[in-house]
Image (cartoon, helix red, strand yellow):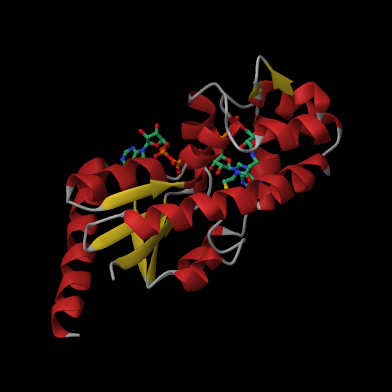
Length: 197
Ligand SMILES: CC(C)(COP(=O)(O)OP(=O)(O)OC[C@H]1O[C@@H](n2cnc3c(N)ncnc32)[C@H](O)[C@@H]1O)[C@@H](O)C(=O)NCCC(=O)NCCS
Ligand SMILES: Nc1ncnc2c1ncn2[C@@H]1O[C@H](COP(=O)(O)OP(=O)(O)OP(=O)(O)O)[C@@H](O)[C@H]1O
């Protein structure tokens, strides 16, 4: 049985970047947002269900994120209905990964880990964090979201202070070097616990 480490944090705080640091240090990584991309893509398991629920959201056989954002912009409650379709499919994808992954430590990059109760399936949780201003600057610099869309997603997520308080490890993503050192410390801590178990 592999050790399952959940990796979470608020939007744009550095989950994907930190997940890559774990991968560089030998962990197999599963990424919830990437799973959503597969589910929304051509032939993905969410396409038919989304077509039925939001006919305008499917274009050329795939779910359009731009169309979804317009739908959510007009009707914020639509996000809940999207989640009800997507989250069970994401949970299935995660279980399939866990069943076949090989490394001693598996890392699950899950933005909504605590919000969806996924932490119950983890042996430990690491939470990434950075100050609110840097967070907003990083998200808006990607150019994929307006400040209103950013705030809407942000207010749906559990406050970062609460995520940090519930996590076993906190990783500050102020610089790459600092994050890399914290990842190495966490892996050493987990591996020493595993070797004494
Ligand atoms: C709202 C959508 C269309 C925005 O797409 P876009 O490509 O612009 O952004 P992206 O998917 O990269 O998300 C950006 C950030 O917002 C977070 N986020 C996305 N959906 C949600 C949500 N329902 N609640 C809180 N945070 C969310 C992401 O995890 C990520 O941290 C898209 O995220 C979506 O379809 N979300 C619903 C599915 C979902 O709940 N995904 C969360 C991971 S399981
Ligand atoms: N340790 C770090 N040092 C400096 N910059 C970082 C660090 N970690 C992440 N960043 C930068 O912050 C931005 C957001 O990082 P990343 O995409 O990893 O966040 P995320 O939490 O996965 O985002 P999302 O919630 O939108 O999926 C990127 O531009 C990335 O380069």
